[in-house]
Length: 292
Image (tube, rainbow, N blue to C red):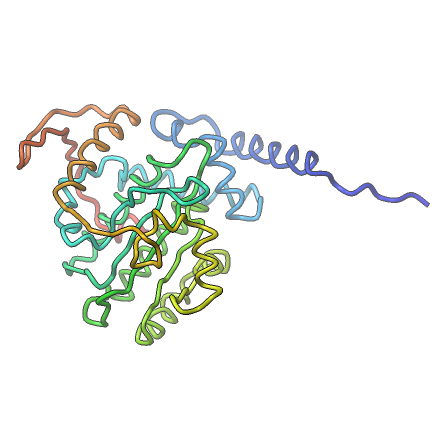
């Protein structure tokens, strides 16, 4: 009797490397930004999102490349979306989690606008910015969601949340490591049930409801974050104070790095407070068209 040899970790790694090569061959020659976007790490994320099925991964990746060519997320500049961030409803934290992942902080109770398209554009900008600020070798980010001041009046519509979920799952696969919903009120439950309908199972598993008086929740937060860096709103010891002017300066500096990374031809322009950054003015693309 012959015993079948169990696949080793090396075998599994070699098989996945072969899948990456197969996907690269399947998508064919690429040029410009598409070529720069499709790194081996990128292909692995799309394969992971489609359970390493090359055909399904190819279709998903091609849809993303089409979306990026029309929506041009890498060309969004902070001055275009800064008004959406005045209250700090979504911002990039000044610390990483224990795995070196970028942390996005969301505060739905600080909602300040009603334009779904502008809200989505602001979110896409911060996703792109978060990716640009990942630690070397890291592909994912963590989300911290603070429900202070949350009410149904301040919450974004389910339709807008659905569109954000669509973009995240379709065009940023495997970018989200975990999302902590910290101390959500009961009225949020109905909203989440409506949104969860649009989440694929893998994404839904990454959403964690955590509560300050729950021992397991506290330990879970400590396993992902250093309490010295974690804001008190999430059970840590640091203070969370959003300074829109300071954050705008940081984003303006990052915009220069983003432009250099994507090698975008730009011209300098000036905004208030003596800031000098660079400008790209792509034709606005309706979100409905981007999601089609």
